[in-house]
Each structure stands twice: as C-alpha cells, then as structure tokens.
Length: 422
Image (cartoon, rainbow, N blue to C red):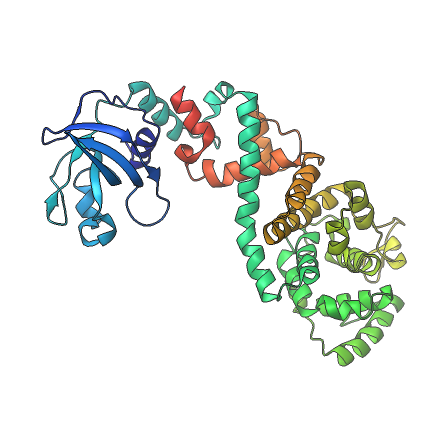
C-alpha cells in the first residue's frame, strides 16, 4: 500500500529516480531543491525550486497518492494552494487546476526503489508494538544515542506547554508550581487527581505561614484530604482539632474523600502515608525549587526528598490501625519518579524562561545519572534488544513508543527513515 507519508518521505530525501523526469503533459522536469516540509496548514513543501523545461520556478509542492485527491481535499477552494509549482503524485488520474491554470504533475510510480516500498510495507504491517524491531540492528549505537537525546528534548518540549499554562495561571509563582507538581506525582498514577485537587485547595502560601510546625502542616493536609471527619484514635482527634481551628482561620474547604483509592495499593503507597511524607518535605524544605535552581547536586536532592513521615506513621499506614514499626520514608524509585516528572521538567522550563543553558545541562546531567525506569514500555524495548542505560534513555524510549511507534509515525522517526534508506 502506497501512502502519502511514504511519498513525502521519498520526495524530501530524494529517494526516487530523478533522471529523465517528464510531467504527465510531456514537460521536462528537473528538481533543483525539494523544498522544506510544511508542518502547518497548506501545501506539503515550501520554498522548492523546480526547473520546468528552461524556466526555474520557486514555490510550493503538494503531494498526493492520486491526482484526484486534490479535489477530494478541496484544495482548489483554498488560496494557500495558489502558489503551487508542481503536483507530485504516485498515480495521475485527473488533471487539476490552480487559479484556473493547469499545474505541472509528475508521477513517482516506478521511480521509488522497490526495496524501500517492501521495507515500508513490512514495517507498517508488523503486529509487534515496535514496528521496526527486525531492522533495529541496522541502526548504529552512535545514531541511536544521538536520536534518543533528541527524543528526550522532544518529550520535555511536549510537557512545556502544559506546564507553562499552569505557570501562567499561577502568575509565575515557581514555588507554587513546584508544590503542585510534587503533589501531583508523589501519590502515583492511581491517586493523581485527588492529590492535584488537594494541592489546589491548600495553596503553598498557606502552608508557608505554618512552615515551622509539622503538626499543623499535616493537620491541614489531612483535613483538606477529608481524612479527619471521623477520628479513630488520639492522633487523628488531635489533628482534627488543629485542622478545625486552621480551616476556620484560613477559610479551607476539604475535597471529596471518596476520590481517594486504597484498593490494590501496597500499604507504603497509601495516600495517608504519602500525604504525611509530603507534609514533612514541605516542613523541612518549604522552598525546595529555589534550592534546586541554586545548584543542588543529585545526592543533595535525594537527601531533601528522603524524609520520613511523622512518628505516628512509624506504626501506622491508616488512622486507627497499628502495624509493625517501620520508618515511612520515600523509596528510591518514588524519588526517581519525582525527579523525572517534577524536577527535570521544571529545570527545562526554567531554561526556556531564562535562556540560561546551565539549567538545560543540569536537567540532562541529572537524568544521565539516574537508573533507567522499569515499566511495561521499557520491557517492550528490552525484549527487542534496546536496553536503556540511564533515565534519559528510558524517557526517550517512552517518547519514541508513544509518539512514533504507537501512531505508526515511522516516516517521522529517525530510525524509520534510516532503515528505509539503507
């Protein structure tokens, strides 16, 4: 099956026989420059240079599988297609007009090497999650490393817009932004929404007014989570008394407690434990983002996040139910997850804001010193022989799987393009 994307690839990289090209009307065609891909609305390539007979033309190129697709896509009604110098198709089945004049048309049928078409069809028909798995050994380690670095930046760019919207809504309050993201990711995917709502209901500026008092911070956070409504023991009762006082003073309204999920979670991941840990992180490091941009090392970041929940939680995972004594400190995997999803994106965001390369370099350095993640996407890559050596590469492979492989964007992937050209 010939697709428009395959034709665009062949045109952009000149993967076709360009000798003795003649338009469907018999004009001699010479491609001086194929132009540049257009990722916005309008013709597929712009600033192309094509010699038709003895005249050099500069302008736009449109690619279609069949000439008649021009009218199917209603390009004749769109003024953006008026400056068209060449129509490139796989098969010519109808003459087309632009501004009431015929447009020179060439066919690529029979000009694209058969091996490229075979490889492409093999890849897109593959049922495996990694479509090009059988061809990956053809990619050199240098090419792989280079592209993974590019994919990592793409992943950060993808997150940039979403984070910037939040930052704008927070009126450029970077510490509040850090707090919001910390809360979003500290509880894991299952409880991400209620943690986000909890952070929105309890602004950092309110917490900072009580930053020297861990008990008050924990009382506000547990109360806002809705976990203090029916006390089961002395500690929960004490938290409730403190919360009732602070809620009245600070005009706080708790979120809906039914949003929280405990089922099938390991006890160390219970939201009660995670909230208690977050409370102590904020107590000990109320303006942690400022410290990070002031050049905390990776070891220092681990130390800042490796704080235990308050003493009550040494013997509890839930209120009113005792358990074997154990300090409830964030595990290394959880901290790595926070570094990947909170600290690194914010360093990139700060780099975009300040244009200071040191923040981009720091984000890369941190990820290169983190171990690769362990999840189902990374397992898929490892089974086909692609084993990330650090957090940067695992993040890049997640980007590659989600944005290229899953959407069959092989012709917009450096690996796919390289494989087809080999």
